[in-house]
Image 1 (tube, one colour):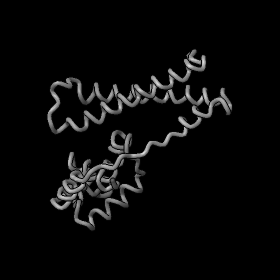
Image 2 (cartoon, rainbow, N blue to C red):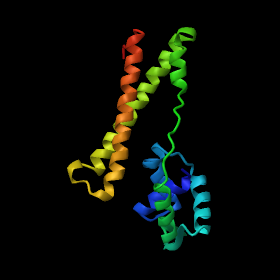
Image 3 (cartoon, rainbow, N blue to C red):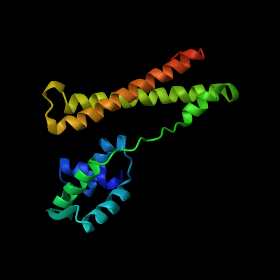
Image 4 (tube, rainbow, N blue to C red):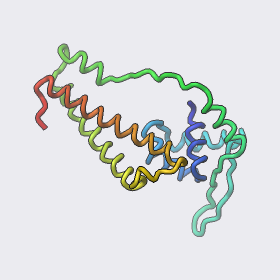
Length: 180
C-alpha cells in the first residue's frame, strides 16, 4: 500500500484540507500507517497531478485561503482497483521479541525494564482507544455500514493492545518480575 491509498480512504470518508488530513492521520490512521505532515502534503500534490483528488480554495477571514481536497472519480476508481488486489502478508519485526529471546544472554534488568515500559505504553494506547470508542461509537449495535470499517479497525487496536499487555505480563511473571 502506498500513502496515496490511505489518503484516498480518508478523503472518501470526508473532504479535508492538508492540515485536516494530517490531524486525521495523527488521531486515527496514523496508529497503523505512519506519515509525516510533509509527506502528506507532497503526496497530495502528486495525487492532484494524477487527478485522484481535486482541490478547491476556501476563503478564510484573517488567514490565507486554504485548499480543501476531495476524491475524484479517478481516485475512487483507483481505490476500487487497489482494494480488489490481494494484500500481501506483512512480515513481523519486533526488536523487543529478539531481546526477550536473548534475555538469558543480555542485561536482564534492562530488558525487563523495557518490557515494563512497553506495558505502560500498551495500557496508555488502550485507554486512548477506549476513549475514542466511547466518543465515536457509544452504541456499537447502532453502527452503520459507512462506519463499520473504522470501528473494526479500532477493535483491532483494542485487541492488539490487550494482547501486548498480556504478553508483557506473561514475560514479567515468567521472570519473577511482575511487581507493578
